[in-house]
Length: 227
Length: 292
Ligand code: SF4
Ligand code: SF4
Image (cartoon, rainbow over all chains, first blue to last red; front, side, top):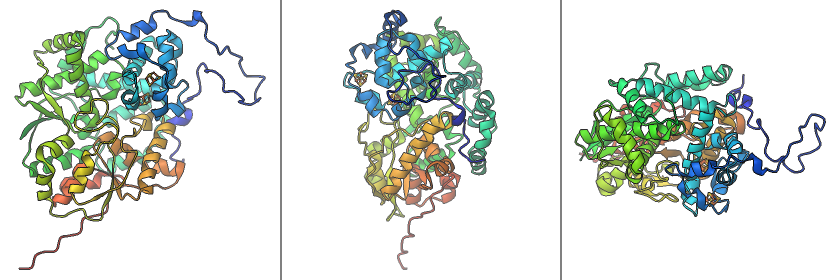
């Protein structure tokens, strides 16, 4: 099996409700193609969503977006996104909640902060992406089997329980939850890491690991019930 | 100089070679690092994506522990930890509601954070506190002839850059030059390595790794030097995947601390160079022994 048989091939990046179909995308499969409205209606809005996001620490400046597109231009992942970062900013501000939360963009964002330092309006785009990820997870509307939310979930679970991350255990759990078959494609990587002593199966754990759960519970935000 | 030291999960696992080389290098320069007692995971990018307040609370516990240890400076070598700890400190000062949440959560475990601990990266400390002159004096095997592409990645210089420029950082360039090596022009020095996307969305992640490696090769670099365990991992461990997608692009990636160790003539076993999937084979020329 070639080493390329990675989870990617089974992650349908283009699935989900399609954004505007690219013009001139050919006449193939006309019989099966779904015809969809590509213009948004006023009634698609969730009025108040934008305001709500802008109330979160770090997200206040969104109001001042001038739609210049600088963020989309510098984003190293925008070529894979269904909506560019600029579009996500516009959609969020204009209350198109479902469109934004179902977008793959928020899961492709690697939190590299390139957009944030370049934005002429000092909009903390990365932090807004974080906020949108949180809301998508809360609402349970992320693309099925998209491994990033699963990774985030496994990660937080492990931190809560042990206080630290043991990378190998995290990776194994991720593959079990998403696509164990893909793990086979990565056997070489695992072998390399074990050979060079970089993977350990011993669970890292802090002494006062109970403190972590106690602190997290004390945060006690009604918006985010503890996992 | 004494520092509280926050290794973070990666430096105990995938990034072991970073810690292995960092500790002897710092000791060699007379810096004392005291590992923070019972530190916990900083939360990294994954926790921020689930719950911002909780992510900050996790990081704040470490800041509070550092304060309690009596050290006013916390050294965080992992770029992701460095960012999260700094971000938490910023949020603590900028948002009263966040401060209240952090205070409440810490109080639940009998901790408190006053907001003073400085979060520092070793690169910053080495160049700005120790100084390049002091470093030059320790060089016994100059890295003459080694061409290095300095790669900072994203999270060290963005968005809370304090000691370097977010567009064109140069701290590591100056450090590597002080070791006797040549820095090649590498315009992608702050481009994102893909983070965890190499594992979760490989068609995007592997391509980003390929772009970085290929640019280094085109610029004639013998190796890439990094400041972050995730960057090192991505650039080092995915060579096989890059090969099958794009053809062979073999460039080793080392931690800047490993280069320092080589130049200081520290025993190679201490530097963890063997831990890389694509290890750096180059060694500095042995200096001619002054004849007796
Ligand atoms: S760079 Fe800033 S102002 Fe320009 S489109 Fe993006 S978020 Fe809006
Ligand atoms: S932080 Fe996210 S949206 Fe911004 S440039 Fe990086 S990947 Fe793109």
